[in-house]
Image 1 (spheres, one colour):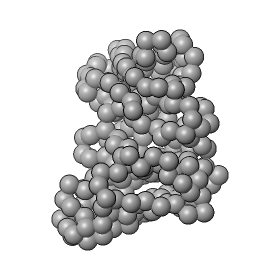
Image 2: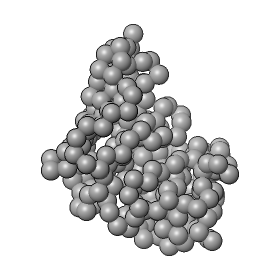
Image 3: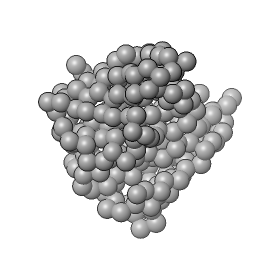
Length: 116
Length: 110
């Protein structure tokens, strides 16, 4: 596709359930980023991938959060045993490469997660 | 790690000029991005500064001082549609992620 695609766009889940969020980056982009944004707040960095490896997982809030990327393309962010404080918009972005200067990151429209 | 500081909120009048500041502390600095985010939408790219000085792009300009760890975004001839959050993100060389400041929420009033 022409842009970064995220699915689902909206997800309502019950507390304690697991959820999977999907990100399909722009073709050829090797760097992929996950962020979380609570209502009215800034972008909270979660994790990023360079190819299939994740050099920096420091932003993951707890061990309930995990992410993987296969084939250097699609990435999934998994949240286990969801809690109400996990409710937020989860944004994915991709760029040509984390080490390449002046390469902007393009964002998807996000997944709005609501834990009830 | 990185420290990025921006004012939380600003208000300006339609037609006026506003300057949004960003200070940062980071190692291996290479350049700085500015993004715009309208409420309920994804962030979109505005500018990227590598060299010291002012870069102009239409009504928007961005300034960088590498030695002072300081950047600003200058918006001229403000329009109501400029009401949005403005995010700065210093970029480091090497294999590091793009981390954003908390953003400045700009409200343009009539």
